[in-house]
Image: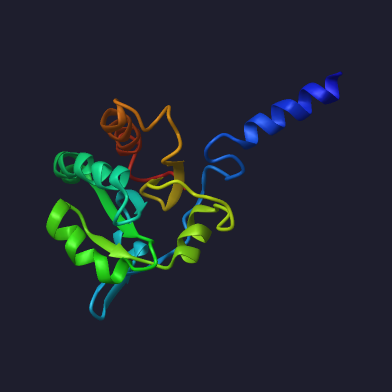
Length: 179
């Protein structure tokens, strides 16, 4: 009986967003392409609290999240917060300029390979992943919180507040001394 309960609990837990990803964990560096020949890495933003949003340019939920992130970036950017959007759809390079023109992100937006993004997020690239995927990274390069678009407890009518709360938790931590 105890084994059946344990197996049921493990099965249900495996359905939860982010299950199986070690948090906190060191954020791997990820090369992103800003368009043309310009590229960089997420490590270029070292020392800042970051939110990396992996998204699909044609995804309405991702587009909405971009609109929510604009005022948060403007407000919290002065405190050392940096949002970076990373498009991961196959045609992202061709669609990125139109996305930027339409949604006017107040933060850098780039594209990257889907498999590289899956490795960065520790998600299984062979399974359906619901975008956007939000990854919060502290000033020391540690992934401290991660969620994906199928997390109804995060992506709801309080999404903007939830994003702001996660960012402010990390911004409130001391800048030095934590490893």
